Image 1 (cartoon, helix red, strand yellow):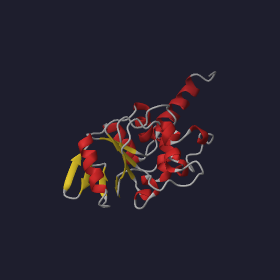
Image 2 (image 1 turned 90 degrees about the horizontal axis):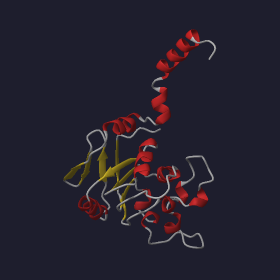
Image 3 (image 1 turned 180 degrees about the vertical axis):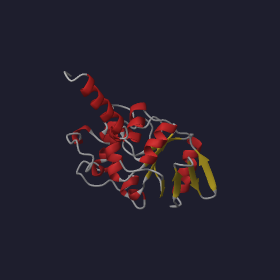
Image 4 (image 1 turned 135 degrees about the vertical axis):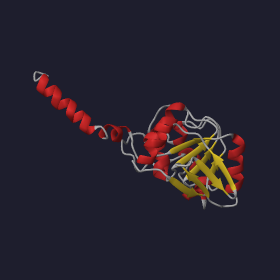
Length: 198
């Protein structure tokens, strides 16, 4: 998993509450177990019309927001099913940070396991960030300091220390297990010697 320390980007604001995982990546695109190639279908039903053409007024279809690495979202982002394809699609599109007043728990945890930083912020700050993004100026997110900077303003955000460590070091569940490989091998060798019948 790619490490996350800091990013600069012009945020894209999607002010819709209760965006569920089916809206993020519809069910017809869940046939793959690859983490790549899903970005083109992110928010498919909002980004494309019935003929498969890009919807002109959807924010992620327009410059500079189609290159945004930061998504500003409404309350309860990522609700619905627990599909891990949702963070995969966001990441494949290029989004590394989602800022919302609240997240669905499973989606929130899946973000950390896939290298995306989900930040919980009060709505008033999200509105400020949205207004700032309309100027097409970059916002700076710094994970080590837990800061968001825009213009001459600074917002601090809270994050679980363990989840922060995993993002900073690029550790998913497999990476965390591999960090303990010496202990695992020691245990296996000891068990093999003391209980050879296992």
